[in-house]
Length: 311
Image (cartoon, rainbow, N blue to C red; front, side, top):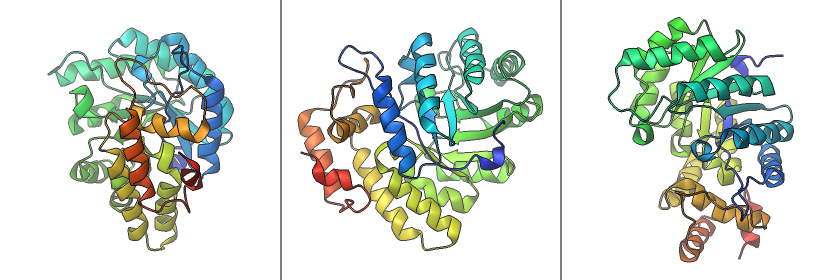
């Protein structure tokens, strides 16, 4: 049964993609990590996003990663990034994602050409809906202008709503701008809005967002779940958000996120499958030690017990 947009909410990790020493996706490690995330209370997963190095993966790799993720996630929902600069490739990937059973595709704007006309972006997405998205398929667009340099404007969103026949259901807003999230929620009250930063989770919920899709949830998922649950039940959430924000700020010292996250996951799970793919480079041993020390100083072991066991 297709996912109802009303169930598209909560804490969603933008899942890292394990890569072994031969630069091959380790699907067993991916399965193990996803199962741990679900057991920690996360409500769904996003595969092949920015944190998952999706744009660095080939077509066959993306398909294998999606199949492994679908097998691991159980009853929770699966989002998958399918956007590329090539309309042809995006159509192929998006169509295949639905065939394999993804609940939602999350689609970047075509990001090679800059300063393109809004009409061109609309034509790109119009073709995508016509050729790749089934009548009951759900789509989210991905707004991350600091990376793509191609923003999803409010005017474009309004046009996309009109041409999507109900299939455009949400936005992943990774702008990091609370005012942008506020305006999204105000102008598109029927749309699923997810903030892309753990720091904005509570603020986003208070504005009307449905949750977060974040890199940090690969490691900080239990902290984010606590915030979401407290807000949903009317319990005090500010102290919990403060703890989550402090942990997120530690990670923000080490960019880009995949290397920092994988450096800790390598310690958590062991093995050699937590490498990054060029052009990303691994975190240095000294930076990893600083990252681990900073996280431990926040006394998070009651929610992240595996931190206490790391060297």
